[in-house]
Length: 287
Image (cartoon, rainbow, N blue to C red):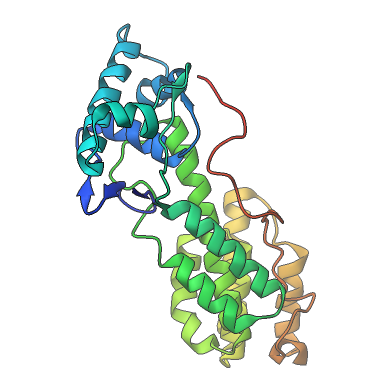
């Protein structure tokens, strides 16, 4: 069974789709798919579907949706609903668990691939890192969980995935800059800083690309736009790291031209040292 949440929800086997179109059953399946291979409590499912105002029939309605999903999965997998209830979407005693059943899950694959790319970058294997990170980012088919109504748990999950997507984009851009592709990066980074006007790492990469492309005035203008946004939106000044980069550009410091892991350019991305986030908490969470 192939599960996809990096774009519209996909739950498919041999080309047969199991994801329903009705909004609430689709939302319930999306939460089970996002938290694949781990039990999701009935309380959490109810909280996702109705938040603070569940109907008195909430438990019964969840059970009805589960029956519908089991039938859809049985059709896609060409097995009986009883087999689905036993192996693919069983009741655990306090919740339900969707099993990947040896199939694929695009978010899990993306997180593993992004971590491999980050390790290659840290090891200085820039060509390899570029290939791996591009492969990871190609797994995205659009915004995570597009077309699914998002309650509190799916919203948090999508936010987490989108943060890791942006981190992978940053790392891929850093690799490309190290490989000397600064001219090609300017258009992409121009759009990224517009979409993320308070993001210092992206602005650092944009400034470096502009400077290396022989456009120091535009690099300094990018710094001043960031400074103005930070002041107006947050009431703060840019960090010492990006101010150091501004000063290096003003001084035309030769270090900016080198393939560098310098104190001026090294990205301190806020990423864990392990293999990326689990898609699910280590303990069941209720309500």
